[in-house]
Length: 69
Image 1 (cartoon, helix red, strand yellow):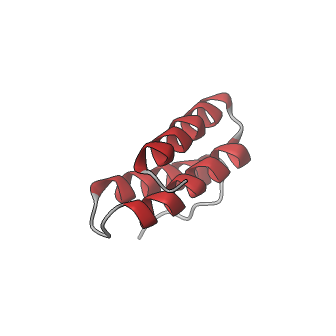
Image 2 (cartoon, one colour; image 1 turned 90 degrees about the horizontal axis):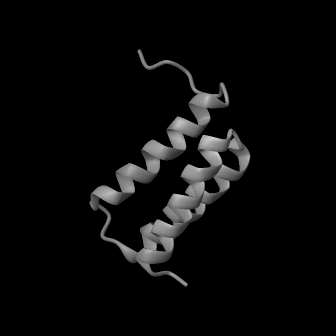
């Protein structure tokens, strides 16, 4: 249940939902992916950054992201 391949599957599902405009479902899938990656991967693994980026993209498209200063 905490294998990195499962995290990648959740990530892919999140991307599909994102492309369909189903942002709440995309966010849920990306957050689940991140939870698994935090368990399965070392804390400095680049896949964690990809998950944070995907979550940020969803929030941005939902209009819930403030511009960086």
